[in-house]
Length: 166
Image (cartoon, rainbow, N blue to C red; front, top):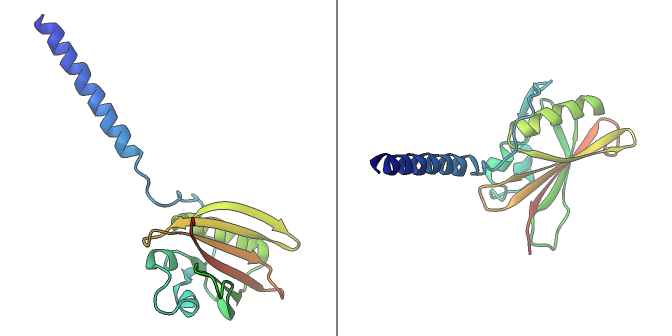
């Protein structure tokens, strides 16, 4: 009888261990997994350019600091796309020294490496649009869209949107 009790306790302990490990593995980390691709060109944070879009720190640092752009990314125009709305929806147009294929390779590597989940890549005439999401420390999900080319050749649009579920 003692061996049955010992066996029952052993089985229960193993089951609790499996449940504990499974529970820890199921905790979300708040972002995507890395792309596994090296970032093909020198990168810098888009935070200074985004600060001009959102004075007063409307964009959380864990969002602004994790949008990487190629070195030489030079904003030329800013816009508020939701002037009368309550959610954040702004864009900037910048000049870049990379062609659409180079930018695609850059953002496909850089966004996932910073915790962004690429949701969609759509081909457009002469280039593409990349769409990615990430949970912010402010409790909102954020979406970033990159459209290349945008307007004139050598210009790209970076759009940042705060997602509200109301």
